[in-house]
Image (cartoon, rainbow over the protein chains, first blue to last red):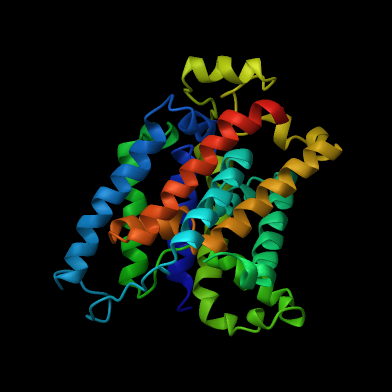
Length: 137
Length: 186
């Protein structure tokens, strides 16, 4: 039962991204064509508010449910991996119009094609760990 | 209220609500990030037989799998009951640009039939596009160390330079695909 809260937050996440059309291939295409502010507004407002929230956590004004200060694991600082990995990710994101969150949310619509995308993503993650020792970091 | 719920939600509602999701996960002692689930699922699927990296103790990520399962259900709920009309108010220029590269009825539903319909799926080109797109996302996100949630939302909110570099990468890749490759592929 201790996991039910994550299930509920997940449902919330799925509904938000669906209702805001973030899971739509068309919205991603429109974003990369700079023809709408919508996606920039979604990500931008989430980040601006996110900066504020994280500062409140860091200053100890907000605490987690156990009253402790939160620790955010730092991202790996590897310029080439961040950049090249990011570019590869972006190529796929624009092609199928779905990053990992929306990919799973779209599964809930019962579209068979999404299953192929998820399979491709699993394969991609699997292959990355097979070849990572040769990848620039 | 119900009326508002059934309309498409504007960015200034969706963005802060995404921050709320991030906040709730922090509050429950976790960090928002969807793409690490790809590795967890590989590990559960037996990828450890091929690569010892996947012999990880995936049980510590159970909460995140449950979160993703919730997201799938959220997608289902929204599709079934909360979105009576899936017409998207796209920029007319976008609709015209897509029509010129052979993608018709842009914005009449969430997903273009040219990529996601069964007809597309059962063509060689169609299935290759889906597999390749998914592969690039999965490979790229693990190489970069995060996706839109982990890097763009949490990483940027935490003012992390690696996340800024990754997000610049997301855009470089996305712009190349959209402006150069998509017109060739379709």
